[in-house]
Image (cartoon, rainbow, N blue to C red; front, side, top):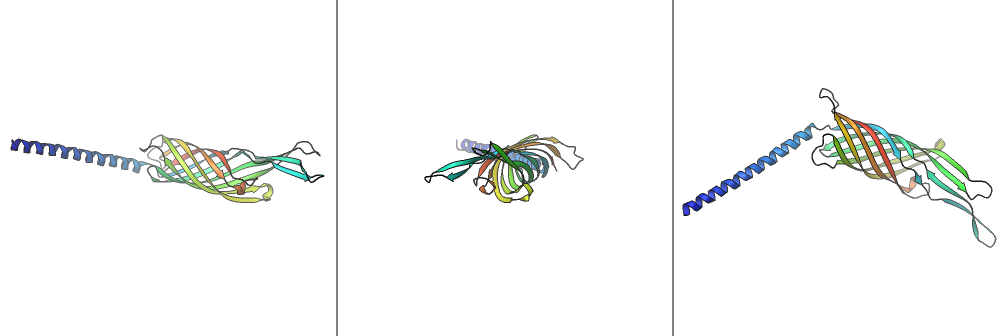
Length: 236
């Protein structure tokens, strides 16, 4: 009986040891596979494309005058807004981990600052506008949401910040401020031939919410502005 129990114990120990060896081998093989896939991923991404920022509405500006008895009345009211801002964007990204990429972008856009004057007793409704150029230099991070290194489609979470410079018509006024953003992106890539330096190329669509500070707000307030980028990219 004692010999049978000893044999059973040794058999169970061998089974447990075999399972542990198989599990360890599986972990090693999986790690090697992921490392090989990560090593084959392109490291640098260059992109260029189109940017569109949504229009921004500002608080109305009201001019009042004092009348007899110390009361005040509105003389005129101006409704102000910034039109949609089309522009161009260039971006460079460097992969620092299988799912992490550090990015920097430069964007140039144009818009018009429009003020519509109403309730003016001396004139009908009038509209005044001026052109405005905006330069943005951004830095941020893009995190791939898929755990395994993707081949074609990629879903990304993006976040970062940068500097804004607004130049009003004729350089009459130059305003500078900092901004932050957060959003997401999707990209689709095609494989290039192995004989070329370019490993992949494709399309990327970004959507983000940009927090614009009060320094670049006509009404002295901060605003959240939706921004969309559509770009072509190459990866090395």
